[in-house]
Amino acid sequence: MDGVSVKPVRVVLADDHPIWRDGVRADLAEGFEVVGEASSAPEAIAVIRQAKPDLVVCDLNMPGGGGIAVVRACAETTRIVMLTVSEAERDLLDAVAAGAVGYLVKSTPGPELRSALVQAAAGDVVFSPALAALVLGEFRRLARASSGLQPLSDREREVLQLVARGHTYRQIGAELFIAEKTVENHVRNILGKLHLSRRHELIRYAIDHGIE
Amino acid sequence: MSKLRTAATPNPGGAGLEVSLLSGVAAFRWVAWAWMTVVVAVTSGDLARPWLAFALAGVTLAVTAALTVWLRPSPRSLLGSGPVAAELACGLAVVVADGWAYKSGHVFGPSQTLGVVWPLSGVLMAGIALGPLAGMVAGAAFGPARLFDAFANGVHHFDGHRVLSMASTALVYALAGAIVGYITRLLRQAREEVAAAQAREDVARTLHDGVLQTLAAIERRTAEPEIGRLARDQERELRDYLFSARNGRRRAGDLAVALHRAASRFESTFQGRAELLVPDDIPRLADPQIQALAGAVGEALSNAGKHGRAGRVTIYVEPAASGGVFCSVKDDGVGFDPTVTVEGVGLSGSVRARVLEAGGRAEVHSAPGEGTEICLWMGSA
Image (cartoon, rainbow over all chains, first blue to last red; front, side, top):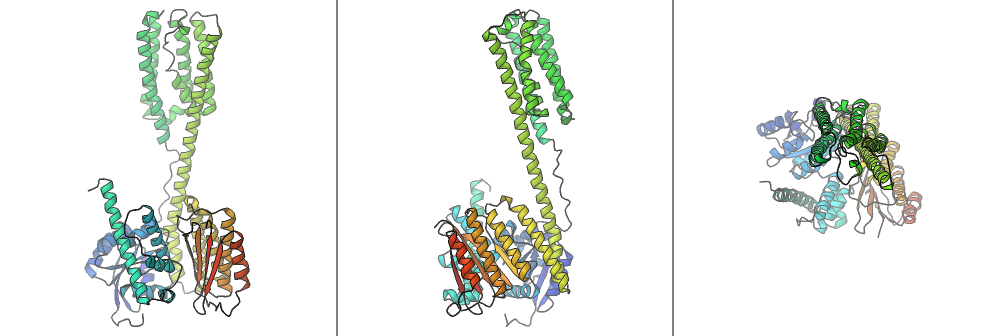
């Protein structure tokens, strides 16, 4: 991402640990402008609606409904990246399925964090190997539940598996003889399918259980 | 989750189970008492001393009511040996007195006697409160009680049928007491296991939310490399602990644990980062296969650290299309050109040999500057 515009990325930080907000703010000294901070989900939703940032960096575990509440309320209009201490959380997939554009582990080193956030602000999905692995597992689960929902195409599965195995988009492009941009498009489509599948599943669940 | 949550006490003294069991016995007493009144009414023509029958019904009613009322304020006190012994004595007395209430010969007659069902509650209580052995002994005591019942009824001659009848009472009551005691013990054990699991989960969550966060913050913000390394080591150890504390519920447990150990070893030996991705839905492997796979991954990792000078490794596992397990180890190291480089001894010798021996296969992909990836397949073809 060498062509970053001079205009800094406007960010809202939501985390109930002030020490974390301080740390991330320090990491985002250049190229970013922190336009708001929040320490709970309701507060974050209010700050986001008021500040209209380019990007939200949001802790998964927060009082008042957690990061997922923020995603549900704001993901339609704002790009949200989740922060989490570890990947072993079901909520994480829920947050991404609900519309977050990706997530980062809190111990991610500063430079890596910055480049991922720049990428996210530019409209890309932050798709780490761990997230790819989670999504692959989710699609296997959906396939077993034979929900008849859009499965992944062979190519999408291939791309997703390579991401999970730790290949970069550039490497994947080279291996599959496709452009790096095409790889990104596949990843975006996969996330779109995940959002759709989750919504279908919720509706099916509601119908099956007689919930209005 | 901002504050460390005090691990919720799993309530080891929780009386929920006891209250349910005692409520069950209380209901049993009422039904048994109602049955007694029905028997008294139907067999009234056979009573030698009706007043005694009414007195027994009155006493058992009083005991039934008292134990029901008592249950609410202090269920635990009902489990003491005192109340249990008292109820048991009361039941035995009812069985013996029963013989005196009826005309001679009734107790071995074709009809019911009043003291058959209600005394069983004392046996159930002995089983619940004092265990299966106590329940069995309490039940067996009703054999002799029926003998005295017969004496009180004026019966002094015992043929095979009568002995059998008394023995069967003793056997059935003893079995009931033992089984109730045994089931209660199982239920208590299950409750304790659940409580222990909850306590572990609470501790894990507290550590996870609080301590792990703090360590990660220190690691990222400190300017001192030594402090950062310390925080990183502690974080890794804590993750290991949390992982093994939680993996009991994972089907993939064994393989995941073995791979986790290999990843930890790589991190502490080479100061790199190893990301381990193991889903819950991978098929179970036999122990030798797990060992071979984990051993091969360990070799691949040390190869990545030593020769590849890798800083970051991704270990990915998924169910293979062929039915077994697929595992890849990808590093961001210097890589090599497979067409000119003879594969390192570590790679061909250890990685390939290990998986081949256990019925798996391995592929090595690498290019200069692109890192190295080792793909492993293990399990049914």
